Length: 194
Image 1 (cartoon, rainbow, N blue to C red):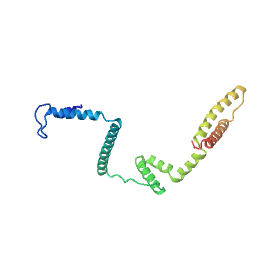
Image 2: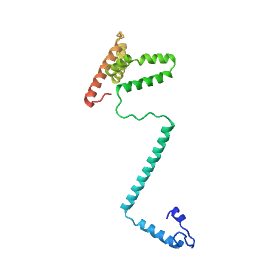
Image 3: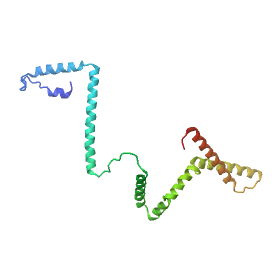
Image 4: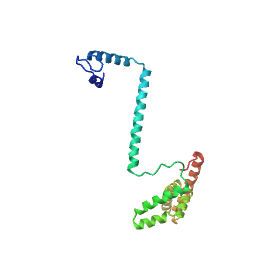
């Protein structure tokens, strides 16, 4: 028996005024009731557990909805929008965000931000970034430039050749081409851009 059940039972031999029973009769009835409930099948206990879960879930939902109502009353929240975002809404949101961010910048930073985030510069930057200035191509070009220039310098130093200065540029271009080819084949195999 739980503490709650024990505390509800009166242990005095007095007669209960509600139904005229003594405390010992009440104790006998309660103990038989608990014995019967213990003998229930596992299926019945599963049903009771499921019922308790549902009640707890309903209670949690009602508490949550009550707190949401308080939140919406406390602060003016924009209504939840349904459907997909169109180009006009996306542009308006972008402009609003840019104005907010730029308002927090210093005047020189604000001017630079307006120049960099102008429509034409952003579009050309996207095109260049997705075609010529691929990350793998730039990385591979840099690595090749370092390795091949170092090897060329060591070989030229040992054999007495003079370097023209174009070696680093040529090595970078070779590495860049290898990086572009790698990206192309990776796109063919996986179907995903890096």
